[in-house]
Length: 275
Length: 309
Image (tube, rainbow over all chains, first blue to last red; front, side):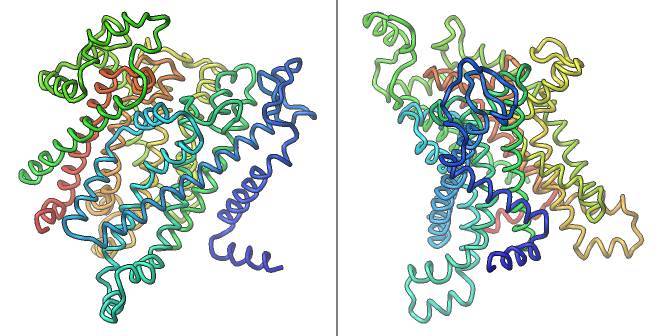
């Protein structure tokens, strides 16, 4: 019953709406990760005789042009979106915190040079960069992580740097330095733990951005390799058949937006709480 | 202020060259050339094509030539659209994207600011809470979802707009709103958060105590401070909007520049990639400059604090 009390305290702290959002996000995550066991059909199983069919008892969310079960494709697509959202965010947080902290700790000329680099990368046209990356290294899901992570770390780097600059001059860090703590020790013992709350908030706000980027890449046809679906490619395919088969567009679009909304809501509540 | 401006410009120029240099070499390191996809080209023809366009020269020589032509404002012929120069292509397509982008930008700013300020003003009432929730929903609806749904609803079901095309002034309505919606939601959220924060500050209480009315407090005191995050967001946002959106232009079949950003990179159309990148980089640096200047105009501390370092 520990979980129950945990849920209660979460609700007390963040309110009902955020609790529902968190529950929805976590449940969707678990179901999508278990897609192999939960999905009623394999995602690539075609039923050419059936073709495009509206939602029915056999296929709750209908089937696409090739008679593939929409619910199953939605679950597998969701799995990709979750994977990309969480892993690419992790990559970007890792790079951003490391880079920002280093820049802040170094200070002076090194700091301003490192931040200049961030400014330059900010103004690079991202889409062209990603397309060139995929053309150079071929399409793979790992490349998507790297490409998205390589873009999204910039904001985190700025935040981490600004906070490190503040923490560096605070009294407890000075005291620790006076007591003979090494620079590495200061980073591990004092800077990192104090960055953690901001990092968590930033992660919650980065995940929806990353999921949207993945959807955008899938829209360009640069996402995961078909027949494996992602929510982005499902929306794109759905848009093509929306006149005859609106369910192909509406279900993935609704699921995707609901996921984004719930994680954004959690991020907003976390930001409010931090203030 | 003038020194602030000059310094910002001096900083922007090297960044511009860094960006175009980086992209120039990145495009060349990607395997494959612009003529690979053309069917059944004999090796001799390919060689002749490459030497005609100077692609067989060493990279540094190509780069020097590119810079020399750039100084004259000449971007060379497109490798994919034969008979078109990159200058002509960009001029023609950018007009479409620009007019669409301006509509979307005006919509985003007007709608976003109004919604954001209203949401903050009625923060504790159902109206304000609804606005807050709606603007949160707005940033969860990428244009790839809004665009087809808008077509389905307004063009196919209600038949009040054309589904696609770019022939009449009316054709701009749906794409401009679709494109601007996401940005207006962001602006609304930024404005809401910063207005709400400013409203809780001491100077607002003083103004109230002085007997100033609600409208006056907003227009004279609060907005000036609260607008700052919106201004810094608008710099990159304007650059993105005005150079065209791939998704919206593809779904609504609009002959704008957004599609070329993607197709030129996919086709290895070197000169066209560079043209797009130059335009994008120029826009983003220009609008960052404009938003910095606007920030300095709203908050003189920024221009002054800049020199204390």
